[in-house]
Length: 332
Ligand code: AQP
Image (cartoon, rainbow, N blue to C red):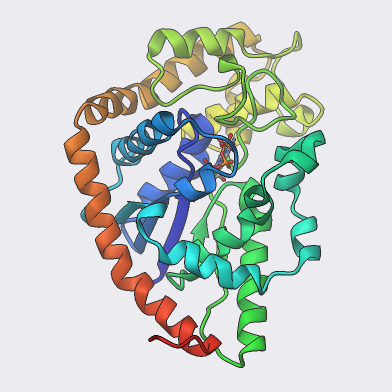
């Protein structure tokens, strides 16, 4: 059985991009794989997080995972800071990864923007910690959205260089798994930016906790254009906002985008948006309700995280010990 690892940051409200690009795929994978899902709070503090908000978001993301359909008994679900081996292996990888490799990471450039000199060192070396997250479990596959592909490639480079430097086969090469029709859900306000928790505009995303009225309002306000919907998805290439809405419809209805174009060919956006609202409410509504129920049961969420951390330590301590032996650290 292959081992799957993936992570999600507790940096704000979970949104439709997280659901379609990650969570929904994780739920499907649990049937056939050994899955480890980590709420990556160490990654979260690479940009400022209010401490109370971070704790709140960590529980809310845990609720989101379970409400989406992940079984916490079958899968390991835990928060990263509870398992110190992540930070320990990351340090070793800080000494393996090359500056030139990190300089190429587009997410750092996007997140640091013009303020590069002011960005935290943590944000810069974020991919090394991500490599540690994955390799600590010798994971074979990492289900992620399109935006994370470059970081998985870096994890492979780190694994390869570690193995070469120390003449070992310790780490397998992890593969990204990019699944579904919505591998990169874009902002509802700007089709050139991805939907993101940290986008200051609430109207840019549908949150997993949004009720029917919020979903409907946000879809109505979503940027579209005045043209009719085409019968061929190729004609959407120069219309990023329209393409995004069609891709969301396709993913939510488990169809491909061509089928959606055929269904709505020649229709106006007002008609399409009504259908999209109905569909989004029917898929996301029950998940939001279940999330709210779980969030009110803090004791249960904390017990899930504690159990997950204990189970993840069984695997990760063993791998870290192998790494320390290979590197030559004395276990005094
Ligand atoms: N817009 C998206 N479309 C498809 N997949 C997405 N993911 C995130 N946004 C989209 C996928 O969700 C998983 C968890 O991501 P994350 O929360 O750890 O980090 P992120 O990619 O940085 O997400 P955000 O929402 O943009 O968070 P902030 O604003 O805090 O940086 C990943 O598998 C990711 O691919």
